[in-house]
Amino acid sequence: MSVWDCDNHKMKESNKENNLENIVQENNYNNSLLRRWAVDTSFAHMVYTPIFAVAEHLYVGMNNEDLIKSRGTGLIVGSVTTLAYTLFADWLLKKCNVTKESSKLKRYSVETLGGFAGFALGLGGYYGILKILGIPPEQNEKALEASIFITLATTYHFRIGMNKWRKYWNVK
Image 1 (cartoon, rainbow, N blue to C red):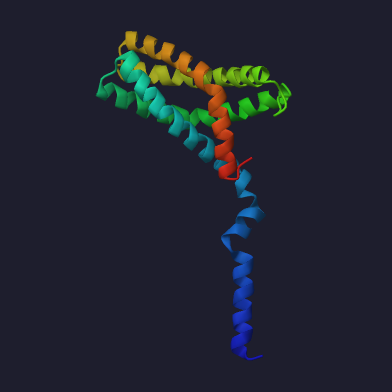
Image 2 (spheres, one colour):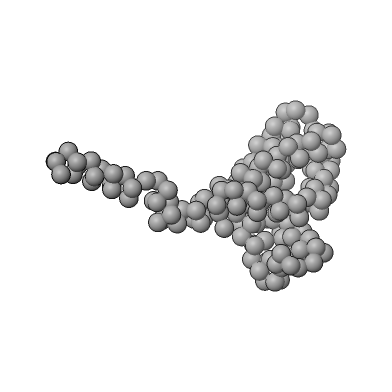
C-alpha cells in the first residue's frame, strides 16, 4: 500500500466518523429541548398565525396596522410559551393514560384541556401586550372570544398535526 492509499483510507475513515448524521445521533440532538422548541414552535406559528389573522380581521375587526401588531405579539408570546404548553400537554396525556387505543372522546377531552392550559399560559402576556400597544378594549374582548373558539375547535387536530410534524423532524 502506498502512502497515498494510506492517507486516502484515513480520510475515508475520518469522513465516516465525522459526518453530520453520526454527530447528531451520537449527541442525541434529535431529542434536545432546543430542537423540540424549534419544531413545536414552528408548527404552532404555521398553524395559528393565519387562523388568528383571519379571525382578528373578520370577527374582531382589526385594521391592518393592529393586525400586524397582534400577529407580531402572537409570534413573540407563542415563541416563549409553546414549549411549556407542549411539555404540559404531553405530560397530561401520559398522566391520563391516553394512548392510540383510547376512545376519541377521551383523547379529544384531554387534548382540549391541555390546549386550554396553553391558552391560559399565553393569555396574560398576549392580551396585556395588545393593551399596551393600544388595541381597543372591545377588540381585546372579541379577540378573547375568538381565541376560546379557536382553541376549542382546533386543539385536537393541532396536536395530531404537531405529532406528524415531530415525526417528520424526528423529534420525540
